[in-house]
Length: 69
View (cartoon, rainbow, N blue to C red):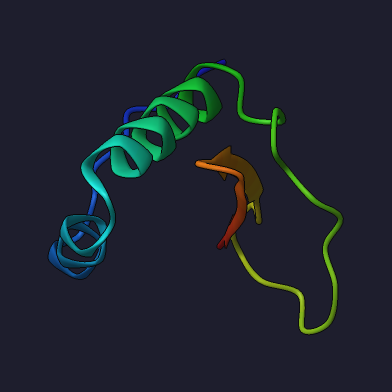
């Protein structure tokens, strides 16, 4: 089961602030999550939210970047 991804304007604004290559890597991982939703899913915590949570960790130019939602 996959999903269609639609980014809100705030997310697009945040993406535009990233290095273009890092932004592209992040978008690739988001698309992979859409195809395979449990790829970066994480265990729920309190408070329980009505949507799936995720974590994406990327290394770019020797630096670790952590994205979560």
